[in-house]
Length: 293
Image 1 (cartoon, rainbow, N blue to C red):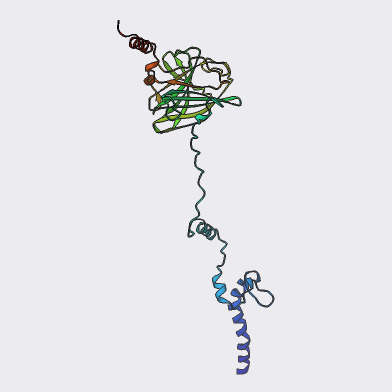
Image 2 (image 1 turned 30 degrees about the vertical axis):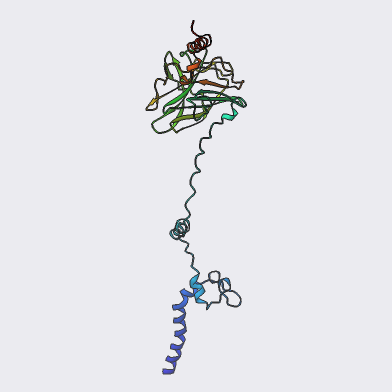
């Protein structure tokens, strides 16, 4: 009797051990352990190589673990891998005065020999396809403009202005002169606009179509016009009266198809060019040569 009990106990013991170890045995599959011929584990390690198995982390298929691993790799590495930032905005390309009279027409007002960064006022124009590109610059913290007129007088003129606002931006606006007052026009023919305020100067560049539908406030630039040059202060992004009482104008009508480099001396450099001064110089010269009677 005792012998039978020992036999039964010996029969149940392996079954109990199998049941206890069954879940662990089922959890390990050949694909996970890499078991194959020769009883070798993943990447050629033997099953008994416990250190190598512990060194290789197991992959958790849960979303939380995936997100954590991605975050660790993306942000928490030793040097860090931030998402790429937007490329920097291209700086304003300087105006090339050496092209004046060659590939573009220019007007300079100020000190003799001045350029786009030192003249009181500077304007250039050139044809680019069906557009005219204008470059304007003036010694002001407000606005700089060019007007297209059928005469040399202000009134009934198409005006393009570059205005420096309170936010530091330079905006290109379209105006129409009504007498001595500039009225902003919502229809703006300017495109490819860019501007900058640096060294107390407003500088801008924009394109405008040569031909436009016939309208009172917008002129066709393929025709020749007098150019009116003006600049002045701005209050909260709105233009005010120009700096000088009699702004300079082109001596004759301007054709966009003809490139010239025209210099106009400012008032400070016109002393010896006025008729009265020239007459005075002639009189003094004659007096010195002839002597007193």
